[in-house]
Image 1 (spheres, rainbow, N blue to C red):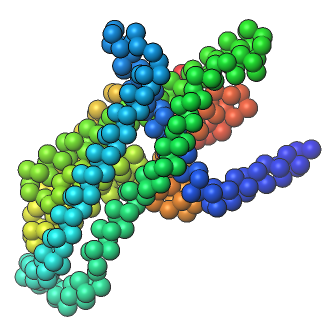
Image 2 (image 1 turned 90 degrees about the horizontal axis):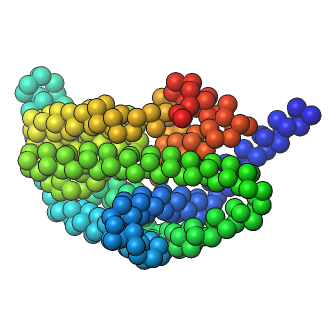
Image 3 (image 1 turned 180 degrees about the horizontal axis):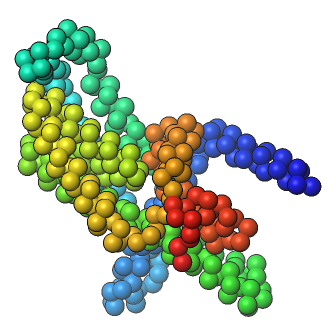
Length: 343
């Protein structure tokens, strides 16, 4: 019997992986719709704290919250597109500065890297780099119609869910227990997504002013990149710091601006990540560092960079959900950082 269960479990895992690979065009927009749905619920909860707003019909509050989120996303994509155009016009400067940097290194360290840098410059196509970078970021929101369609059905399903729960569990005691469990999961996931978004926004906001002060081209683009990558713990922060630093060196043709960007943005990442985020989030992000690296690798193989960006939010949500059920609680403990679950 135990062998049969293991075989069934193995087959289920294989089936899930295959479905994730071949149905990613359906699953990724659905996951994004769920994340946006939780953000809309957070906006609604904030609006309900205002007295005159709380008197309005719930559907009006839901509609307004949805329009606020969509407006923010449209504004962000529009501004990022303009910043990409600014970067595209400065590509010849970046390419020319490679040789200048190589000569500086040659003079400083007496290392003949000029020819190597020249070959490297010929092989580099910064247009393709920026294009792939931008397509990765916008690819998450590329299929906007599908995401909005999923989001619409989630919003329509939301007011009907309590009625379905009552029909599914007619016994009052059982219904109250299930409803309490659903509310707890909703609260935990909503808090994580809202607070992680807030800390990522703070990191991007501070980094934007730092890059603007230094004079980096298209600071809004780099700030948005930092905001997105901040959802990936450790690795995301490192990449988000190194990327604008390298482009600062290419822009100015000197090492000093790159070191300055690396230092200031790095300090912002350290302060927000080690001081602000723990105070706001508490023990919400209770994932083992090993699990973080494994999930990054696994979801990266399955869904590419999009999977890496979504890997940690997905894992956090799974841990929160599994921790609420006795049968899956051991798996949640295994994935946790301290071997204990948040209560």
